[in-house]
Length: 510
Image (tube, rainbow, N blue to C red; front, top):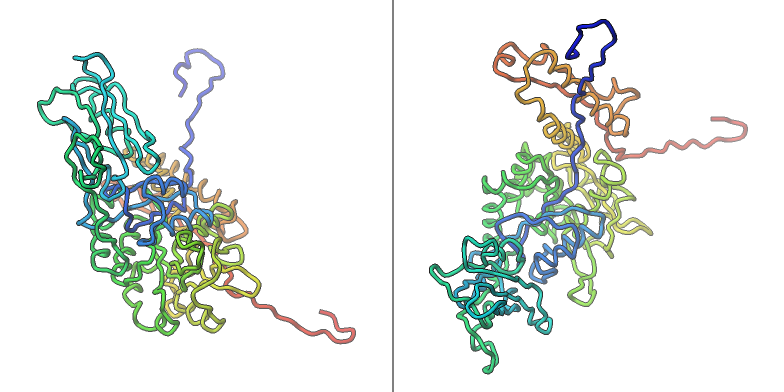
């Protein structure tokens, strides 16, 4: 009621409407693989190929990761995250410069291109110095400069605090008890034998190394992958993502484990078939390990894609389809919506010059009925995605999660409602709350219907929302549980367009 109604008249009271539920992103893609550079203990967001080059060093012939990220952005992707896997034998370049103990930000030989120089910036006996980082492969150009540094931990410009917070190259610490300002030059990871005899150097060094390149299919790769994304602490702390791609990974047991992680994280796995797999191989029992309860959280694509390799002068090379497909999904989500199947003539693979295998209509039909999505080059058409089924999409299984857009639309609705209904926690669990929940969720579902995401000619046909005493027991209410039942009728792709043609003769009419 209004605060005061002591005199006759008309009073106005403004009531707050339930918070609007905003749809979450649908195509943030997490790429996982080996790289020679970059943080190996955290997921790094990248929004362009330039970002990837800056963080992970760009393309590398030893890894498919950089190529997949490049193909993702070329096909319409806009938001990616990268989890770098590094072998345990990778070494971090380090050196000392006076009292500063300096280490590269990540393992690898990449840091050995950088030199350090420390100079005083005030009068003798002062407490300030400057640290410059120069790139020896760019004619010694200074790429980072940190000014007014101090060795006093109480100073706002204490060297470790000031440098470690902003440097993309270096992390430093101070030898305990040191008060002498550092001066001179040092070289990350470079020994005296690697430098010209006349080079002044004031430091001991520890060489960096890339370590063993982790190749999909190797035991070491699988172990590091599952230790990374499978680690509970890291997995639960991962930034939200929607799609998962491990370019070139075809090991069935490992992919099955990733399916389970995707189910836990409400994400979708884009899996690559074996590069040399024949249709008969894919129709055999070899994929049985990926057909379990988590199969609807993944799709398998065949065959691999031919595209120019920039590191080989543009010569064609076979690449796994996951990077291309992730970009196509992102492009389709942005132009049509998550409910549109990422397949068809609009799902062309940008940058592809061909396919490693050319499938016939019969072969495509055999794979499609088994829930394996094909890439095809139709006459006078660029290579394109020509399948939209999950790995639970076998015809004889009759799963409700047969199609990719149905599964991904459900994930979109779940994520949006989970994030949009946080306001309801700790509200009184009674009719007013239930009414607000029905209104808030119902409005979100109505918006989906208006966007063309659901079946039916009216909102009543497309979805329903219930939250009342029919959806929860007295024990639920007493236990503080509010149950919202949401049902929706998803659109399914028209896989088969059948034309019925009748020949009219003479004066016959249709």
